[in-house]
Image (cartoon, rainbow, N blue to C red; front, top):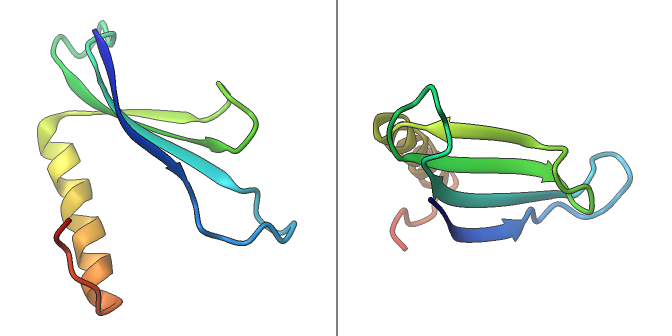
Length: 82
C-alpha cells in the first residue's frame, strides 16, 4: 500500500549554489524489514526523480521530526499550527 499525502518544492531561489529541492510525504508498507506502515519522507533535486533520499519513519520518528519543525518555526517567530 502506498499513499501520497503532500508534496512541494523548497522556497530557496534558484541561484546555482544549491539545487532546488522537491519533497514528498506519504505512507507505505513496502519496507520488508519494517513490518508495518511507515511515514515516508522523500527529498530529491527538482527534475531528478528517483535520485533522492527516502526515509521510512516509524510513528515515533515522524512525531520527533514534526516537533523539530515546530521548534524551528517557533524560533522564527511563526505559529506551529496548520
